[in-house]
Length: 332
Image (tube, rainbow, N blue to C red):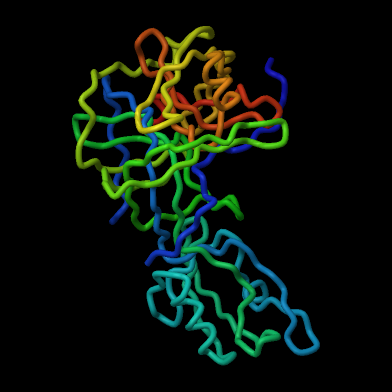
């Protein structure tokens, strides 16, 4: 029985959040062979409407109020319309609220895929502007790692977990997105005080789209696929504890192979991204980053020349250990 440990979700680096103004397509069908990834990429994900990431009270006259909370708005709600106007970005909704002068604004809200209407009456803040008391976000950007490429239909799977808002923790309802090539320029090592990061920049070369953001990864179409050998995806019952390898890019643009150990097969739940516990054993990788850092999510794990899974989480109290999702789970 593995000891219980605190973990920190290794999502893509969301330190840089931009405001940006496709339908969801099904995940590709399970295939016997894929091309493994390991390349770091840059992504831009655009919300379906705007996401509520925080509610706050503010001073209005002699009172402390939060009109958004009073109207029934909750953190992680997605606002898609305001007074029948489709909302595409933060600025658009903020302007509608501000110009309402306190009159009722009807919002169309998505909560757990259920659409509902909420009526809100903004109130003046200390600056004299009409304010709702909600913080919203319309997009995010960051770095992650490609897990595999499917040459049959020019698609990919990456990250091994969904893209969540850094403040609210909610899965971002995506409207569209794109991925670009990226170059890693430096690494901030993991320490006892926190999990490190891969640091780099996006190039101008777009390599694909993001068509689905799910708890098991992000998926989309590619403009091209690397010229590398194909590899079979291991079934859950083929995976054994013991020696394996991980492919990650921790400098430049080329992934390298590092040794790891599969410590435990926790479960084979198809809805879980914590199926395996892995430990970094490669001395070079430990010296370079102290095990696992943010940005390595999605790094493919190979055992006996088969793709067994992809890295998803890191343990807070031991950055050489983390969770991985099964490869066959990512394929759907």
